[in-house]
Structures are given as C-alpha cells and as structure tokens.
Length: 203
Image 1 (spheres, rainbow, N blue to C red):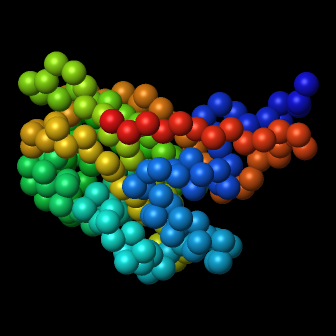
Image 2: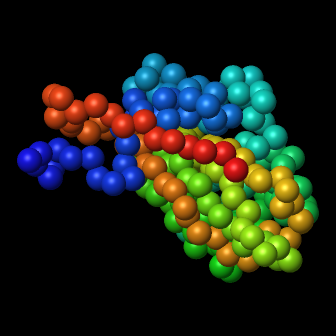
C-alpha cells in the first residue's frame, strides 16, 4: 500500500496534468500560457507577464481579480460575457457588489484558495437561475498572479458560461459539481503509477 504522505488526495492533480486535462477545452490556451511563464520564471507570473494575444479567443470570457485588504476581491478586468451575465459591466466592483448572498461565499472561497495556496483551480459549477427550472452549468479556471511586490495578490482566469441562461440577474445559488486543484509543487507518485486523465464534458 502506498504511504498516505505520497498519495495524491482526491480532487488534487499535479501541474503536469493540467494541459492534458484541458485537451479539448477552450480554457487550454490560457492555462498553457500561464504554465509557460511559470516554468520560465520558476515563479508565479506577474500581471505584466501576461500576454492576452496568447489566448485571444478567450478574452470575452477572461477576467482578472485582485485581493482587497477587506478580505473581499475586486474585478480589475473582465470580458463582455460578464456584462451579459450580470446585466452590467462589473469592472471595478467587488464580489460583494455583484454576487447574490448565496453565491458570494463560493466565489470568495475559490479566489482565496487560488491566492493563498497558491494553486490552480478548475471547477464545474451549476447555478440555479431565477425563472429557470433546471440549473445552468459553467466552467471556470483560476490561476495565481503576482503583484508588483512579488506577492501573490491577483488571480487570472476565465469562465465559460452556458449562454442559454443569460438573464442579467445572476444566480440564486451555486453548487460545485467538479473541482480539481493543481499544486505548484509536484506530488510524489509510485514508480508504476500513471496519472489518470480526467473527463471534462462541456455543457
């Protein structure tokens, strides 16, 4: 039996698994760009390192959040799909400004974990929308970003919304249906253990 200290906990993945896990996902170019920067720098990339031209088809779904001293997060940049989702442009607003009370803790926990660990988190979330009987599903990925002082104080990512459910009201509630956390420090594997490839079905 493999010792507990060298096993990979459920839901946790090695960084080398990320691009393969996103093989058929529109999120892959952003993840691949971040990984290239991370490996060349041997450190978490800074905001100035990021090149949007490396993931042009994802810009409408991309975002950049910063951690605030209050413990909340602020939307620094976001694509136009967020205006469709919320009914307004949330750039410059905090999570408390834009999220319903049922959704706020989930989004804050997602952002806080990406920054504090730091790690990359991939989630599939289902949200109950006002006026709809079935939940809306979407994917999001969050990747840590260093600030001007070199501290990890931002996260960049993208959210793929199920566009059938745009209504400009936001979600009443959300549940995580799938989550994978990619450590920046590789886990030890048994010599004969092969990484499992995850199936990430779209909507």
